[in-house]
Length: 449
Image 1 (spheres, rainbow, N blue to C red):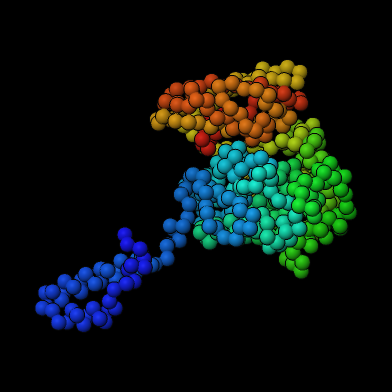
Image 2: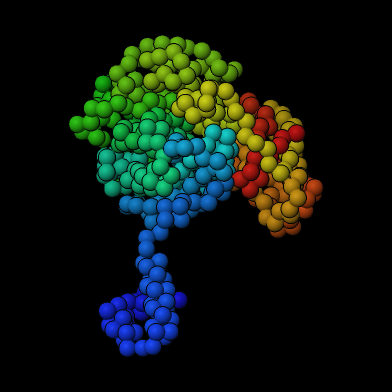
Protein backbone atom coordinates (compact mmCIF):
# COMPACT_ATOMS: atom_id res chain seq x y z
CA UNK A 1 0.00 0.00 0.00
CA UNK A 2 1.53 3.40 -0.92
CA UNK A 3 2.05 5.95 1.83
CA UNK A 4 -0.85 8.30 2.44
CA UNK A 5 1.15 11.27 1.05
CA UNK A 6 1.42 9.48 -2.30
CA UNK A 7 -2.35 9.19 -2.50
CA UNK A 8 -2.79 12.95 -2.28
CA UNK A 9 -0.44 13.54 -5.23
CA UNK A 10 -1.70 13.48 -8.84
CA UNK A 11 -4.33 15.44 -10.77
CA UNK A 12 -7.33 17.10 -9.23
CA UNK A 13 -10.80 15.75 -9.95
CA UNK A 14 -11.64 18.61 -12.35
CA UNK A 15 -8.44 18.16 -14.35
CA UNK A 16 -9.01 14.42 -14.64
CA UNK A 17 -12.62 14.83 -15.79
CA UNK A 18 -11.45 17.32 -18.40
CA UNK A 19 -9.03 14.75 -19.75
CA UNK A 20 -11.72 12.05 -19.74
CA UNK A 21 -14.09 14.24 -21.78
CA UNK A 22 -11.71 14.14 -24.78
CA UNK A 23 -11.75 10.29 -24.91
CA UNK A 24 -14.21 7.87 -26.62
CA UNK A 25 -17.29 6.95 -24.52
CA UNK A 26 -16.08 3.43 -23.53
CA UNK A 27 -12.74 4.81 -22.44
CA UNK A 28 -14.53 7.57 -20.52
CA UNK A 29 -16.65 5.04 -18.59
CA UNK A 30 -13.64 2.88 -17.74
CA UNK A 31 -11.65 5.89 -16.62
CA UNK A 32 -14.53 7.20 -14.48
CA UNK A 33 -14.88 3.80 -12.80
CA UNK A 34 -11.15 3.75 -12.02
CA UNK A 35 -11.32 7.28 -10.66
CA UNK A 36 -14.26 6.47 -8.36
CA UNK A 37 -12.48 3.36 -7.02
CA UNK A 38 -9.36 5.42 -6.32
CA UNK A 39 -11.35 8.14 -4.56
CA UNK A 40 -13.19 5.56 -2.44
CA UNK A 41 -9.91 3.89 -1.45
CA UNK A 42 -8.44 7.23 -0.47
CA UNK A 43 -11.50 8.04 1.63
CA UNK A 44 -11.29 4.70 3.45
CA UNK A 45 -7.60 5.20 4.15
CA UNK A 46 -8.17 8.63 5.67
CA UNK A 47 -11.36 7.79 7.60
CA UNK A 48 -11.07 7.55 11.41
CA UNK A 49 -11.22 4.02 12.86
CA UNK A 50 -14.57 2.78 14.14
CA UNK A 51 -15.05 2.62 17.89
CA UNK A 52 -15.34 -1.18 17.77
CA UNK A 53 -11.80 -1.41 16.31
CA UNK A 54 -10.45 0.43 19.34
CA UNK A 55 -11.99 -1.96 21.87
CA UNK A 56 -10.05 -4.88 23.34
CA UNK A 57 -10.57 -8.56 22.50
CA UNK A 58 -12.94 -10.30 24.90
CA UNK A 59 -12.13 -12.95 27.51
CA UNK A 60 -8.39 -12.24 27.50
CA UNK A 61 -6.10 -9.81 29.29
CA UNK A 62 -5.08 -7.12 26.82
CA UNK A 63 -2.61 -4.26 27.13
CA UNK A 64 -4.04 -0.93 25.94
CA UNK A 65 -1.63 1.78 24.79
CA UNK A 66 -2.15 5.46 24.02
CA UNK A 67 -5.09 5.65 26.40
CA UNK A 68 -4.62 9.31 27.30
CA UNK A 69 -2.65 11.48 29.72
CA UNK A 70 -0.14 9.26 31.51
CA UNK A 71 2.54 11.37 33.21
CA UNK A 72 4.13 8.50 35.16
CA UNK A 73 4.23 5.96 32.32
CA UNK A 74 1.81 3.42 33.77
CA UNK A 75 0.71 0.44 31.72
CA UNK A 76 -2.98 -0.32 31.22
CA UNK A 77 -4.33 -3.86 31.07
CA UNK A 78 -7.98 -4.54 30.37
CA UNK A 79 -10.21 -7.56 30.84
CA UNK A 80 -13.52 -7.56 28.96
CA UNK A 81 -15.74 -10.62 29.49
CA UNK A 82 -17.29 -12.50 26.59
CA UNK A 83 -20.69 -11.07 27.53
CA UNK A 84 -20.71 -7.45 28.65
CA UNK A 85 -23.82 -5.84 30.11
CA UNK A 86 -25.26 -2.78 28.43
CA UNK A 87 -23.52 0.31 29.84
CA UNK A 88 -21.23 -1.86 31.98
CA UNK A 89 -19.69 -1.03 35.32
CA UNK A 90 -15.91 -0.60 35.56
CA UNK A 91 -13.74 -2.03 38.33
CA UNK A 92 -10.17 -0.74 38.71
CA UNK A 93 -8.05 -3.44 40.43
CA UNK A 94 -4.74 -2.03 41.70
CA UNK A 95 -1.75 -4.24 42.45
CA UNK A 96 0.60 -4.45 45.45
CA UNK A 97 4.29 -3.44 45.58
CA UNK A 98 6.45 -5.76 43.42
CA UNK A 99 3.27 -6.74 41.57
CA UNK A 100 1.85 -5.88 38.17
CA UNK A 101 -1.44 -5.66 36.34
CA UNK A 102 -1.06 -9.21 34.96
CA UNK A 103 -0.20 -10.51 38.46
CA UNK A 104 -3.32 -8.86 39.87
CA UNK A 105 -5.32 -10.43 37.04
CA UNK A 106 -4.03 -13.95 37.67
CA UNK A 107 -3.90 -13.72 41.47
CA UNK A 108 -7.44 -12.47 42.12
CA UNK A 109 -10.86 -13.61 41.00
CA UNK A 110 -12.13 -10.30 39.61
CA UNK A 111 -11.87 -11.46 35.98
CA UNK A 112 -13.87 -14.62 36.76
CA UNK A 113 -16.49 -12.53 38.52
CA UNK A 114 -16.57 -10.18 35.53
CA UNK A 115 -17.39 -13.23 33.38
CA UNK A 116 -20.37 -13.88 35.63
CA UNK A 117 -21.67 -10.33 36.06
CA UNK A 118 -20.64 -8.56 32.86
CA UNK A 119 -18.51 -5.70 34.20
CA UNK A 120 -15.09 -4.63 32.87
CA UNK A 121 -11.84 -4.76 34.86
CA UNK A 122 -8.97 -2.29 34.45
CA UNK A 123 -5.57 -3.39 35.82
CA UNK A 124 -3.10 -0.48 36.12
CA UNK A 125 0.55 -1.55 36.18
CA UNK A 126 3.55 0.38 37.53
CA UNK A 127 6.73 0.60 35.43
CA UNK A 128 9.02 2.28 37.99
CA UNK A 129 11.60 -0.04 39.56
CA UNK A 130 9.88 -0.35 42.95
CA UNK A 131 6.64 -1.53 41.33
CA UNK A 132 4.85 0.56 44.00
CA UNK A 133 2.24 3.18 43.19
CA UNK A 134 2.92 6.82 43.99
CA UNK A 135 0.75 7.60 47.01
CA UNK A 136 3.26 9.97 48.58
CA UNK A 137 4.12 12.90 46.31
CA UNK A 138 2.24 16.22 46.35
CA UNK A 139 1.34 15.50 42.71
CA UNK A 140 -0.34 12.21 43.63
CA UNK A 141 -2.39 13.74 46.43
CA UNK A 142 -4.06 16.36 44.26
CA UNK A 143 -6.73 16.02 41.61
CA UNK A 144 -5.05 16.28 38.21
CA UNK A 145 -1.69 16.65 39.95
CA UNK A 146 0.39 14.84 37.38
CA UNK A 147 1.25 11.39 38.77
CA UNK A 148 -0.23 7.88 38.88
CA UNK A 149 -3.84 8.92 39.64
CA UNK A 150 -3.95 10.94 36.41
CA UNK A 151 -2.94 7.89 34.37
CA UNK A 152 -5.52 5.70 36.11
CA UNK A 153 -8.21 8.32 35.50
CA UNK A 154 -7.25 8.26 31.80
CA UNK A 155 -7.68 4.47 31.77
CA UNK A 156 -11.17 4.89 33.18
CA UNK A 157 -12.04 7.58 30.64
CA UNK A 158 -10.77 5.42 27.76
CA UNK A 159 -12.88 2.47 28.93
CA UNK A 160 -15.98 4.62 29.39
CA UNK A 161 -15.64 5.92 25.84
CA UNK A 162 -14.86 2.54 24.26
CA UNK A 163 -17.70 0.64 25.95
CA UNK A 164 -20.25 3.35 26.76
CA UNK A 165 -19.80 2.41 30.41
CA UNK A 166 -22.01 3.61 33.25
CA UNK A 167 -20.20 6.53 34.86
CA UNK A 168 -22.23 6.08 38.04
CA UNK A 169 -20.78 2.58 38.54
CA UNK A 170 -17.01 2.99 38.57
CA UNK A 171 -15.18 1.33 41.46
CA UNK A 172 -11.64 0.83 42.76
CA UNK A 173 -10.03 -1.89 44.85
CA UNK A 174 -6.45 -2.72 45.72
CA UNK A 175 -4.05 -4.66 47.91
CA UNK A 176 -1.27 -3.00 50.01
CA UNK A 177 0.18 -0.32 47.69
CA UNK A 178 -2.98 -0.79 45.65
CA UNK A 179 -5.06 -0.29 48.79
CA UNK A 180 -3.25 2.98 49.46
CA UNK A 181 -3.91 3.99 45.85
CA UNK A 182 -7.59 3.12 46.30
CA UNK A 183 -7.68 5.64 49.17
CA UNK A 184 -5.91 8.19 46.97
CA UNK A 185 -8.21 7.67 43.98
CA UNK A 186 -11.32 8.18 46.11
CA UNK A 187 -9.83 11.36 47.55
CA UNK A 188 -8.60 12.79 44.25
CA UNK A 189 -11.63 11.82 42.16
CA UNK A 190 -14.74 11.62 44.38
CA UNK A 191 -16.81 12.54 41.33
CA UNK A 192 -15.52 9.51 39.38
CA UNK A 193 -15.57 6.60 41.83
CA UNK A 194 -18.75 5.35 43.48
CA UNK A 195 -16.98 3.18 46.06
CA UNK A 196 -13.68 1.56 46.96
CA UNK A 197 -12.35 -1.49 48.80
CA UNK A 198 -8.88 -1.30 50.37
CA UNK A 199 -7.04 -4.41 51.59
CA UNK A 200 -4.22 -3.53 54.05
CA UNK A 201 -3.97 0.17 53.31
CA UNK A 202 -3.55 3.54 55.05
CA UNK A 203 -5.63 6.74 55.04
CA UNK A 204 -5.47 9.23 52.19
CA UNK A 205 -2.46 11.49 52.77
CA UNK A 206 -0.90 9.35 55.51
CA UNK A 207 2.02 8.34 53.27
CA UNK A 208 2.69 11.92 52.13
CA UNK A 209 6.33 12.93 51.65
CA UNK A 210 8.00 16.02 50.21
CA UNK A 211 11.53 14.69 49.63
CA UNK A 212 10.78 12.38 46.70
CA UNK A 213 10.71 9.27 48.87
CA UNK A 214 8.05 6.64 48.19
CA UNK A 215 8.07 5.42 51.80
CA UNK A 216 6.77 7.02 54.97
CA UNK A 217 7.97 4.97 57.95
CA UNK A 218 5.89 6.85 60.51
CA UNK A 219 2.71 6.06 58.63
CA UNK A 220 3.73 2.46 57.98
CA UNK A 221 4.38 1.98 61.69
CA UNK A 222 0.97 3.38 62.55
CA UNK A 223 2.27 6.37 64.51
CA UNK A 224 0.53 9.09 62.47
CA UNK A 225 -2.81 9.90 64.03
CA UNK A 226 -5.33 12.69 63.50
CA UNK A 227 -8.83 13.50 64.56
CA UNK A 228 -11.60 12.41 62.23
CA UNK A 229 -12.12 16.01 61.17
CA UNK A 230 -8.42 16.45 60.39
CA UNK A 231 -8.33 13.27 58.32
CA UNK A 232 -11.48 14.32 56.49
CA UNK A 233 -10.00 17.73 55.73
CA UNK A 234 -6.85 16.09 54.32
CA UNK A 235 -8.96 14.02 51.90
CA UNK A 236 -11.18 16.95 50.93
CA UNK A 237 -8.16 19.13 50.19
CA UNK A 238 -7.37 16.97 47.18
CA UNK A 239 -10.32 18.50 45.32
CA UNK A 240 -11.00 21.94 46.84
CA UNK A 241 -14.51 23.23 46.40
CA UNK A 242 -16.07 19.87 45.55
CA UNK A 243 -19.44 19.52 47.28
CA UNK A 244 -20.97 16.52 45.53
CA UNK A 245 -21.51 12.97 46.82
CA UNK A 246 -18.54 11.08 48.22
CA UNK A 247 -17.66 7.44 47.47
CA UNK A 248 -18.40 4.70 49.99
CA UNK A 249 -15.45 2.76 51.40
CA UNK A 250 -14.83 -0.83 52.46
CA UNK A 251 -11.72 -1.42 54.59
CA UNK A 252 -9.90 -4.69 55.36
CA UNK A 253 -6.97 -5.09 57.80
CA UNK A 254 -5.22 -7.84 59.75
CA UNK A 255 -4.44 -7.27 63.43
CA UNK A 256 -0.91 -8.66 62.96
CA UNK A 257 0.01 -6.58 59.93
CA UNK A 258 3.75 -5.89 60.30
CA UNK A 259 4.11 -3.83 57.09
CA UNK A 260 1.31 -1.28 57.40
CA UNK A 261 0.49 -1.56 61.09
CA UNK A 262 -3.01 -2.14 62.39
CA UNK A 263 -3.53 1.39 63.86
CA UNK A 264 -3.87 2.58 60.25
CA UNK A 265 -7.16 0.67 60.09
CA UNK A 266 -8.70 2.84 62.82
CA UNK A 267 -7.36 5.99 61.20
CA UNK A 268 -8.96 5.00 57.87
CA UNK A 269 -12.29 4.49 59.65
CA UNK A 270 -11.99 7.97 61.17
CA UNK A 271 -11.24 9.50 57.78
CA UNK A 272 -13.97 7.91 55.70
CA UNK A 273 -16.73 8.23 58.29
CA UNK A 274 -15.90 11.92 58.47
CA UNK A 275 -15.80 12.24 54.67
CA UNK A 276 -19.21 10.57 54.56
CA UNK A 277 -20.51 12.70 57.42
CA UNK A 278 -21.58 9.69 59.52
CA UNK A 279 -20.98 8.70 63.13
CA UNK A 280 -17.82 6.85 64.18
CA UNK A 281 -20.06 4.65 66.31
CA UNK A 282 -20.92 1.49 64.35
CA UNK A 283 -24.52 1.12 63.23
CA UNK A 284 -23.99 -2.65 63.13
CA UNK A 285 -21.34 -5.13 64.27
CA UNK A 286 -21.13 -8.82 63.35
CA UNK A 287 -18.73 -11.67 62.57
CA UNK A 288 -19.35 -12.95 59.03
CA UNK A 289 -16.52 -15.48 59.41
CA UNK A 290 -14.52 -16.92 62.30
CA UNK A 291 -11.92 -14.39 63.46
CA UNK A 292 -13.53 -11.53 61.54
CA UNK A 293 -15.17 -8.48 63.09
CA UNK A 294 -17.22 -6.39 60.69
CA UNK A 295 -18.44 -2.93 61.63
CA UNK A 296 -20.74 -0.81 59.51
CA UNK A 297 -21.13 2.95 59.74
CA UNK A 298 -23.97 5.12 58.49
CA UNK A 299 -26.12 2.09 57.70
CA UNK A 300 -26.65 -1.55 58.59
CA UNK A 301 -26.94 -3.22 55.18
CA UNK A 302 -24.51 -4.47 52.55
CA UNK A 303 -24.05 -0.96 51.15
CA UNK A 304 -23.35 1.06 54.28
CA UNK A 305 -21.37 4.26 53.78
CA UNK A 306 -18.33 2.66 55.44
CA UNK A 307 -17.72 -1.03 56.11
CA UNK A 308 -14.65 -2.22 58.02
CA UNK A 309 -13.50 -5.85 58.42
CA UNK A 310 -10.83 -6.65 61.03
CA UNK A 311 -9.13 -10.05 60.75
CA UNK A 312 -7.83 -11.35 64.07
CA UNK A 313 -4.31 -12.80 63.99
CA UNK A 314 -3.84 -12.16 60.27
CA UNK A 315 -0.79 -10.41 58.82
CA UNK A 316 -0.28 -8.06 55.90
CA UNK A 317 -1.01 -10.56 53.13
CA UNK A 318 -4.63 -11.02 54.07
CA UNK A 319 -6.31 -11.19 50.67
CA UNK A 320 -7.81 -14.64 50.05
CA UNK A 321 -10.27 -16.32 47.72
CA UNK A 322 -13.86 -15.34 48.41
CA UNK A 323 -13.10 -11.82 49.57
CA UNK A 324 -13.65 -10.37 46.10
CA UNK A 325 -17.23 -11.66 46.18
CA UNK A 326 -17.77 -9.63 49.36
CA UNK A 327 -16.29 -6.61 47.61
CA UNK A 328 -18.83 -7.03 44.81
CA UNK A 329 -21.65 -7.25 47.36
CA UNK A 330 -20.51 -3.96 48.91
CA UNK A 331 -20.27 -2.36 45.46
CA UNK A 332 -23.65 -3.75 44.41
CA UNK A 333 -22.21 -5.57 41.39
CA UNK A 334 -23.34 -9.07 42.30
CA UNK A 335 -27.02 -8.87 41.29
CA UNK A 336 -28.49 -9.54 44.70
CA UNK A 337 -25.69 -10.24 47.14
CA UNK A 338 -25.09 -13.96 46.59
CA UNK A 339 -21.55 -15.29 46.86
CA UNK A 340 -20.76 -16.39 43.30
CA UNK A 341 -18.22 -18.98 42.20
CA UNK A 342 -16.25 -18.59 38.98
CA UNK A 343 -16.83 -21.00 36.12
CA UNK A 344 -14.49 -24.00 36.06
CA UNK A 345 -12.03 -24.13 33.18
CA UNK A 346 -10.37 -27.05 31.38
CA UNK A 347 -8.14 -27.92 34.32
CA UNK A 348 -8.37 -29.68 37.66
CA UNK A 349 -6.26 -29.24 40.78
CA UNK A 350 -5.99 -31.46 43.83
CA UNK A 351 -4.00 -30.28 46.82
CA UNK A 352 -3.10 -31.80 50.17
CA UNK A 353 -1.16 -30.25 53.05
CA UNK A 354 0.84 -31.69 55.92
CA UNK A 355 1.31 -29.19 58.76
CA UNK A 356 3.28 -28.95 61.98
CA UNK A 357 3.82 -26.20 64.58
CA UNK A 358 4.82 -23.32 62.31
CA UNK A 359 5.37 -25.06 58.99
CA UNK A 360 3.67 -27.08 56.29
CA UNK A 361 4.19 -28.81 52.98
CA UNK A 362 1.67 -28.78 50.15
CA UNK A 363 1.44 -31.28 47.31
CA UNK A 364 -0.40 -30.03 44.22
CA UNK A 365 -1.47 -32.05 41.18
CA UNK A 366 -2.50 -30.09 38.09
CA UNK A 367 -4.41 -31.93 35.33
CA UNK A 368 -5.17 -30.59 31.87
CA UNK A 369 -8.81 -31.60 31.36
CA UNK A 370 -9.11 -29.71 28.09
CA UNK A 371 -8.75 -30.98 24.53
CA UNK A 372 -5.68 -28.91 23.59
CA UNK A 373 -2.06 -29.26 24.68
CA UNK A 374 -0.83 -26.58 27.07
CA UNK A 375 2.63 -25.36 26.11
CA UNK A 376 3.92 -23.37 29.08
CA UNK A 377 1.80 -22.97 32.17
CA UNK A 378 1.35 -20.69 35.15
CA UNK A 379 -0.77 -21.81 38.08
CA UNK A 380 -2.06 -18.90 40.18
CA UNK A 381 -3.39 -19.19 43.73
CA UNK A 382 -3.59 -17.13 46.91
CA UNK A 383 -1.95 -18.37 50.10
CA UNK A 384 -3.99 -17.99 53.28
CA UNK A 385 -2.87 -15.09 55.50
CA UNK A 386 0.28 -15.76 57.47
CA UNK A 387 1.74 -18.33 55.06
CA UNK A 388 5.09 -17.77 53.33
CA UNK A 389 6.72 -20.18 50.89
CA UNK A 390 10.31 -21.04 51.82
CA UNK A 391 11.07 -23.46 48.97
CA UNK A 392 9.31 -25.44 46.26
CA UNK A 393 9.80 -28.14 43.68
CA UNK A 394 8.91 -28.76 40.02
CA UNK A 395 8.01 -25.06 39.57
CA UNK A 396 9.19 -21.58 40.47
CA UNK A 397 7.03 -19.61 42.91
CA UNK A 398 6.68 -15.81 43.08
CA UNK A 399 6.04 -13.93 45.23
CA UNK A 400 6.48 -16.03 48.37
CA UNK A 401 3.18 -14.96 49.97
CA UNK A 402 -0.18 -13.51 49.08
CA UNK A 403 -1.15 -13.96 45.41
CA UNK A 404 1.39 -16.52 44.18
CA UNK A 405 2.13 -17.75 40.66
CA UNK A 406 3.80 -21.13 40.11
CA UNK A 407 5.57 -21.26 36.72
CA UNK A 408 6.55 -24.46 34.95
CA UNK A 409 10.09 -25.81 34.96
CA UNK A 410 11.82 -26.40 31.63
CA UNK A 411 11.18 -30.15 31.83
CA UNK A 412 7.42 -30.05 32.55
CA UNK A 413 6.19 -27.12 30.47
CA UNK A 414 4.04 -29.25 28.15
CA UNK A 415 0.74 -30.70 29.35
CA UNK A 416 -1.10 -32.88 26.87
CA UNK A 417 -4.87 -33.41 27.26
CA UNK A 418 -5.55 -35.49 30.39
CA UNK A 419 -1.90 -35.25 31.44
CA UNK A 420 -0.94 -34.21 34.97
CA UNK A 421 2.02 -32.59 36.66
CA UNK A 422 2.84 -32.72 40.37
CA UNK A 423 4.39 -29.73 42.11
CA UNK A 424 4.72 -28.66 45.72
CA UNK A 425 6.09 -26.21 48.22
CA UNK A 426 7.13 -25.82 51.83
CA UNK A 427 5.86 -22.83 53.80
CA UNK A 428 5.79 -21.29 57.24
CA UNK A 429 2.50 -20.28 58.82
CA UNK A 430 1.26 -18.30 61.81
CA UNK A 431 -1.65 -20.55 62.67
CA UNK A 432 -3.59 -20.98 59.45
CA UNK A 433 -2.22 -24.07 57.69
CA UNK A 434 -5.08 -24.46 55.19
CA UNK A 435 -4.49 -25.12 51.51
CA UNK A 436 -5.38 -22.48 48.93
CA UNK A 437 -9.03 -22.71 48.00
CA UNK A 438 -8.84 -21.84 44.31
CA UNK A 439 -6.43 -22.06 41.38
CA UNK A 440 -6.30 -20.72 37.85
CA UNK A 441 -4.28 -22.10 34.93
CA UNK A 442 -3.01 -19.39 32.58
CA UNK A 443 -5.79 -17.11 33.80
CA UNK A 444 -8.65 -19.65 33.67
CA UNK A 445 -10.18 -20.93 36.91
CA UNK A 446 -9.71 -24.66 37.58
CA UNK A 447 -11.97 -27.20 39.21
CA UNK A 448 -10.61 -28.01 42.68
CA UNK A 449 -10.97 -31.61 43.75
